[in-house]
Length: 273
Length: 261
Image (cartoon, rainbow over all chains, first blue to last red; front, side):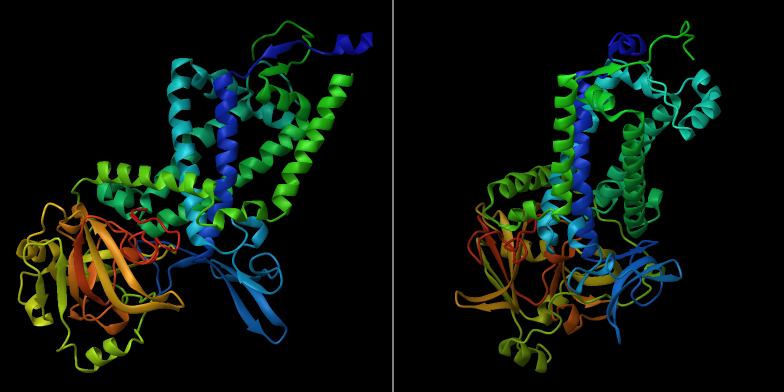
């Protein structure tokens, strides 16, 4: 099919082996950290603002629970001052089982705080070590600079947003500005925040770095931020998957598995914008 | 073309496999609930790394202390709140006048102390945050005698590597016998200035719900390390002598022994 050859651009080696290995280590770690994190959350399904949890006063901003009604067990989720009936998803799920997050969303599927914690902290180490190795390697091989938007990138931001909104993707050897912002946001903001709020929940680490508690506004606020960052990471994952599907899943997957990425054919001289 | 098709087929298969894993409620991983599962044991080995890292980073630092203004509620009781054990009930009904605390094991001078003995020793009062493994926290003022004061009197021998706390409250009655609450800490925590044998809570005698007459406070660890209803402290070279041998009622249930995070 000669036409196809004309419309296909060349394969370029876009993802280094370090990028690919760390990507998959993060993907696996975050999968387990999320599902064991929800297991851990289920042990006390409420989030607070402040140093402690209010039992005799109200400082909870999220609470997932269950109430017995005439119509049977109902799951309730209270966010701020608003209460929602979330039976089937949050509070009560499966065969009238009282649990905040449902069995399909936790590891293990049954209630086991102990097992959830074992898996959570194992993958927390993998995540932290991977991030540390990646940071050193990326500073060394200058991969980190590929993630920082240039001023030209930022000038092109409105156009890039408009192109993404129209699902008009440009396959180039470099990341586009929205990719840079998304990946940099995850690697430089969300993951460090996740690690630091996680450490802020450790009574041992509180003794090592008590100032970190003040930075986050107390242990229970740190726990709430840990949860909010989890929601943001899940949001990133959803958009990440949607973009891969929209931009061509085979090409995108090939690049993150083999490193080779097919870019758009050159229609006009590249102006590097 | 065939390469492309194979790739498509592979990707379809892979994504189907991934969704099956997600849809099955991660039941594939429920084998990790088994304490003897080799993969679980591998993952648990990270606990040892966590312990060493925390020991290295925290050294002899103090847990954060708070002010009276931070005490906004009573200390939430958890776990056993009123031991059913007959011996304990008898001691409680007598106002713990007949209660004794024993220091045994690898010490030059075993001790038997009354509550008044403990209260007559130098006391430490600290306002600290209690962090339950479940995720909640509660700030309260604790008063008690530093464990280091008691250890100075008992004089642990070189063999002493751990302090084991034996408690009044029965957690389980099974065919293999009665299991009472027990905990253990290493000597770094045992000599830590904030490790106290607390008999007072928020300016009042320690209530039964919170471990009367005596509970231990280990402020750089989670709540389950802070054994309530303590009657005996054993200094020992190993912690494997009681329960299933993990040195702690909850460690026997698959929780981390050190409990620093």
